[in-house]
Amino acid sequence: MVIVRKFAFFLFLFFSLCIIKVSADNNTAHDGFVRLILDQKNGSFSLYYLADTRGRNYEPLLYSNDPTTSYISIMVDDVVYKPAQSRFFRTRMETQRDQPSLIFDSDFVLVRQIFTPIRTSNSGNINGVEVTVSIQNKRNRESFIGLRILLDTILGEEKGRVPFITNSELIRRERIIQGSSGELFWMSRGNNVSLMGSIINPIDPSARRPDYLHFANWRRLNNSSWDLNYRENRSFNLLPYSIDDSAVAYYYHPTSVGAGEIISFSIFLTTDDPDWYKVPARPTPRPVTPVPVQPVVTIPEPEPEPEPEPEPEPESEPEPEPEPVSIITIIEEEPELEEPEPEIEEQNNDIDELFELQEKLGRFLSGELELEEQDLYEIERSINRLRSGQ
Image (tube, rainbow, N blue to C red; front, side):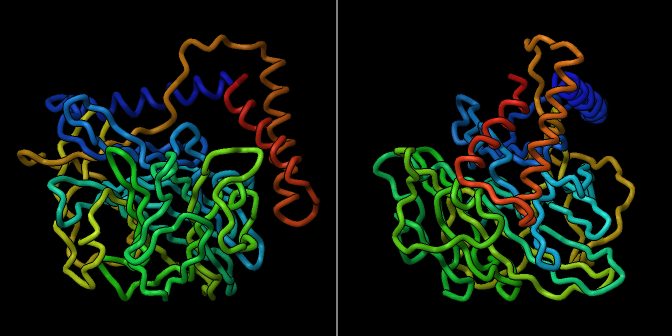
């Protein structure tokens, strides 16, 4: 595990040095409000916002101690996969039009998770991202493909708080909201910052909506490969735990996708701006070009009416404009420099054990193996232990 971490660290240094060379004159992040961290090793993302500009403190908008608790699942011809964890997928990072992406490639589908910076109408700076998941059918026949996006929320979990708020109701217990319900957004509200998520696309209300959203305990949603049995008014608590552990899952039912065709889904994650979500239609807002920082992916002004899923184009160095806003993208996980390196035999044993646990989970998700909830909990603890190198 330490060898893997060191390899990730060297990759991080390599990318950082390349970016510093490009942006040597702007080697600070003082104008950055959104921090997006992508981890190629485990296919996860983290989202932070600079709520305290004086202290320069970035607050997490999702659970950040383990970013892998927020992830996507896909259903292809009645089989469910978690691309970031599946042995059938190879994970890499790409940048198209300077928009960072996590790529999950397999023999039968190609999944792109693309992050685009967003500035809502009442914000003076970039304050969120549009997350677009595109799935290409690589088979030479029709497939039925669906998507689930699980987000591990935290801001509404403090004692006395309402876990979720929509434009018409307070959600204190387990709840399902249909995409056709007329609800526009949900909010997880914290002390210093809030996270909002779209239900109806605020830029293009005619875009495909989720079939439904399920607000429930994170562990219950995580332990379910797809649909979760809904029990109205069930608590967000799950014994023996005594605190709320809230989460929301977007569900898009499988739909027919022809050979070589692409299907796309988009959601928005921003800070508090309910008025922006309530506007039924508006022209696409002009984004602000960010200053390059260390490390940074600068976001140029997009072309009008872009073609869906364009082919990758050669990247060019953009010229920074005065007083912009930046979005920070860190590639690879930050290293743990002080961790001692174990013996090679122990490393190999850890890797073998991790593959065995992941294989067991794969058999469980495919229906080949039955596991009790306690078994899943122990497997989860073991994987977390192995990933942390303890």
